[in-house]
Image (cartoon, rainbow, N blue to C red):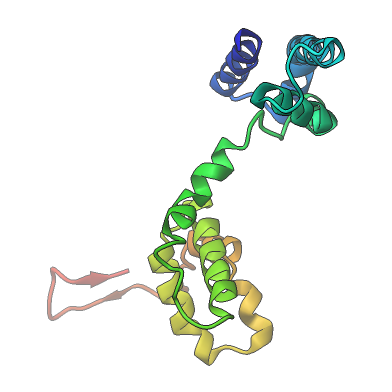
Length: 185
């Protein structure tokens, strides 16, 4: 547990520094790799020496970890990959908690439709888009659009379109002489 704690301390430091993927890979290679190798050595030693019964919880955990060992080490070389999947688990938690509540939401295709809606909502959240505002606008525009225009409704494209500066009017300035307080530019 102490060794795993060291890995998380390194990750916390990288997050505080807002380290790029390349920098994270370099630091992980120099600091996290020796820790990971030490953990692997310990697990292989335990398995070889029969320290834990294979059917015990710890024996199963050691076997499971060693079976997935290559995949667990990927984060060292690839700086964009997180040490754990906590962010993903937190993102899907509302769906996991609600799935018993939604067990009987409709026919067989309802599950697929729900998955699509949840994916769109999470895509909005990850981009800082209010899902309700986005879906309201999309559902308002879709009936009047051609199918080949639908890509412009994807959350990334929608957000980009909304952040563009408003086009300036080329019309000449008009002054309403009847009301000196109301000027149009």
